Image 1 (cartoon, rainbow, N blue to C red):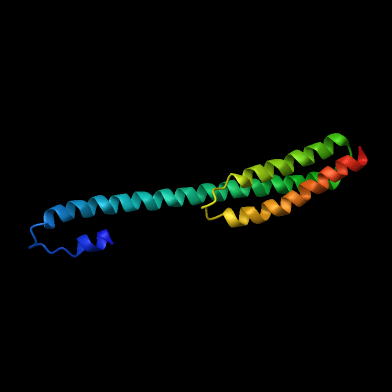
Image 2 (tube, rainbow, N blue to C red):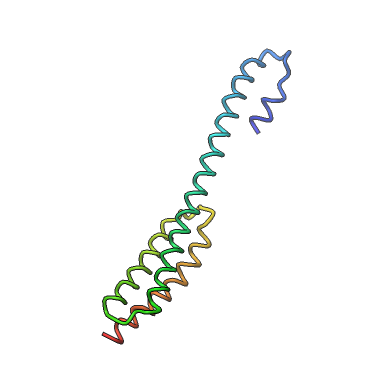
Length: 120
């Protein structure tokens, strides 16, 4: 709104010079803010993908796990995935997706604990 207001000040207005200075400042600040938001979204995307990769690793490991050590590693991998996804900010654009995955992965983690407790 402020930018639109400043753009409407005509050259004959005594406040024109000051308005032009403020307009440049506000447009620069807006550009910085948009860039920071884009970087934050990119970071969240990377974090989300790391969480997914850790889960995929846990899935692959669980397919062949037979020893206590192997099931312990599966559990650690699920815990890592959940921890990574929990680091996504609640106001982030990936938050809802991460929360859904956390619920799914928590069930898989519980299964891995059950396998460990049943077999060893």
